[in-house]
Image (tube, rainbow, N blue to C red; front, side, top):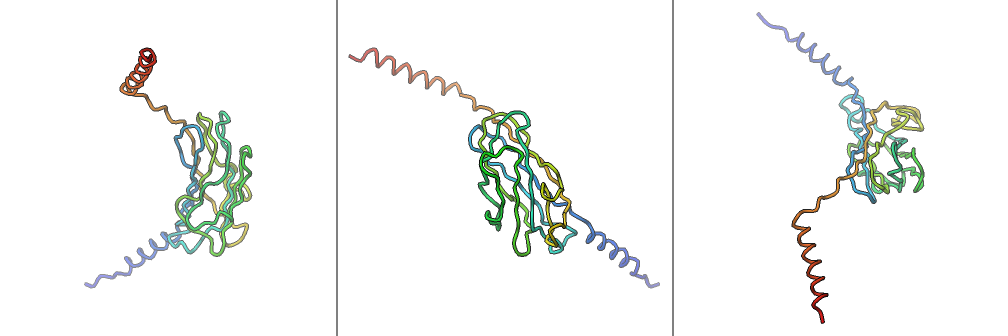
Length: 199
């Protein structure tokens, strides 16, 4: 008796359609960093590589708006600027707040041509850091003009995205070893003895 493969083909076709229809949510993520006081760099990563199924050509991103807040406890961070942008991006296409602007700060990007489906570091924010801990988070998620991702279709084609917060934590001081203390003490005693016996 011949077996029909039509049911299997039908199931495979339905499965393929469901995979194609699957929506992969784009993500924007602020890094968690551990730093000592001074100039610090905080990357923001994106994943626009798979939106609307597995075919990245179905949707690319032409504009991104960020509204970023920080200093939820103390004034530990002061915005300086953008120190770096992702591969293939032009810093001239970014709208950047002035140095020293208080939080929340707004950062915008408008692409050219066919937009981007990049995955990786999008921008790196530069701050002056006085020490202490602070969360760093996005406000007004998926709101055009605030924190949003725009499809290349038109200026109002909002792509719902996942915005993940980050943080900065002060690094613990490096402990001074016993050998270092002994060497420092020995040098100090040598200097004192030299001053005493010097004619």
